Image (cartoon, rainbow, N blue to C red; front, top):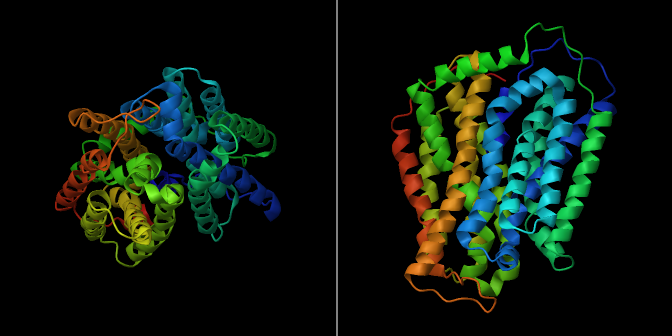
Length: 440
C-alpha cells in the first residue's frame, strides 16, 4: 500500500522526547492504529457489496468504479497539505478531525438514496483516511524511543493489513445477517466514538515555540514541490509509482472479489477471503524487499524484478481459468509479495533529492499513487461496460448487466500494459543512493 511507506516523511523536528509511562503512549498509538484499521475497512468493503450497490441504485460497472475511485480522489486531494497541517496543529486535533470525516462519510453512505450522494460519502472518507497512517506515524515519532519506533511502525502496517482483511470476507459474512446500510451506519457510530476518544485522550508533546505560520509552512512545501517536479528522476519514479500501484488499487481494493466470483462461481463464497490474501502477501513482501534494500539498495533492479515478475502472475489470473482454486490463492499471495516491492518508491525518490524535501517528495509520489486508483478503478469499470455492450451481453434476473469472463479479461488486461511500461521506465531510473536521505 502507498501510505505504508510514508513514515519516512514524518521527521523528528521537536525537542527530545518527553518521558511518559509506556502504557500511556501505547494507548496513544492504539488510537491511531485502530483508526488505520478502521479506514482500511471502509476503503475495501465496497468490493464485497458490488451486487447490492448495482441492484439498489441501478448503476453500471463504470458507476461502481467511480464510487471506489472517489475515495482515492479525496485521499489524493489531501496528500500535499496533510503533513503541514499535522506539524502545525498536532496529531490530536488532526486525527480527531480525520476520523470525523471518515465517520461522516460512512453515515452518509448508509443513508444515501442516490448515487451522487454515495460519491460525496466516498470523497469524505478518502479525505479523512489521508490522515490515518501519517497521523499514527506522527504519534509514534513524538512519543516512542528510537528503539521502539520501527516496531510500532510495523504494528501500524499490520493494523492496516488486518483492516483490509476484515473488509473482505468478514464484512461480506455480516452482510448476510444485516444490510450493508446497517453495517455502514454502525461503522459511522464506531468512527464518531473513536473521534471523541482521540480528541479527549490523545496528547501532543510540547514543542519549542515556532514563529512560522501555517502559510509559511505551505510556502516552503510548495517551494520543495517546485524543485522536485523539475527533477527528471523523481518524475520517472512518480510515473513508475502511478503505474505499479494499479494492481493494488484496482484488483485488491475494488474489482478482485467480483472478478473471482465471475471466474470461479463454484468458489464464490471464498472470493472475498482469497482476495484478502493479496494483503497478507503485501505485508510479507514489503518486509522482504525492505530487508533486501537495506543490504543492497539497488532500487532499479528491484523495480525491474517486481514489474516483470507480475506479468506472468497476472496473465495467468486474468486469461486462464485454473482447475484448482488453491492455485488461484497461491497466485494472489505471490501477487501481494511482488507488490511489496513498490513500497521502495519513496526511498528511490529520496535518493535523488535533498533531505529537506522529504515531505514534498512523499506528498507528490503518494498523490500519484492515489491518482492511479482514482483513474484506473473507474477506467476498468468503463472497459467492463464497453466489453459487455460490444458483445451484446445478457442481463441478470435482477436486470443488471451480467459481466462475463471475457469482459474482465478485456478490462484487466490493462494491467499488463501498465507493468510493461513500468519495466520500460526502470531503464531510465538511475540507481543513486543518498545515504543521508534514506537513513532512518
